[in-house]
Image 1: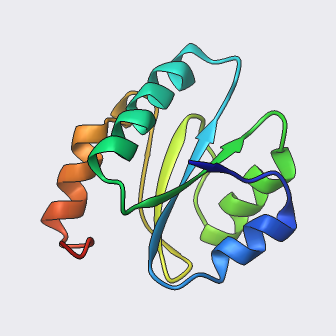
Image 2 (image 1 turned 90 degrees about the vertical axis):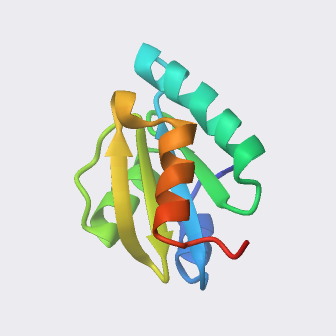
Length: 113
């Protein structure tokens, strides 16, 4: 996972073609700590998916801009699957599971394997 810390970095990511994801994380939330473990597991099971992490308390303008640009209500923790700058799928809190994300990607045939 690569961290996004400013709006310039975010704008570069939003210009990308293809599939990628944002993971919004709060360093003071126990649910975020559990979700972070799932995101780390996801990196092992779906290494082709680029995931960008945003620390919501430390980089609130980036977190807010993601919500605004993708027209998705902010939650934390939150996983947003994005293709061509459009949010395809958003899950939050206890729903963030590496297995369910991997299954969704497979079911929707979003990865080139």
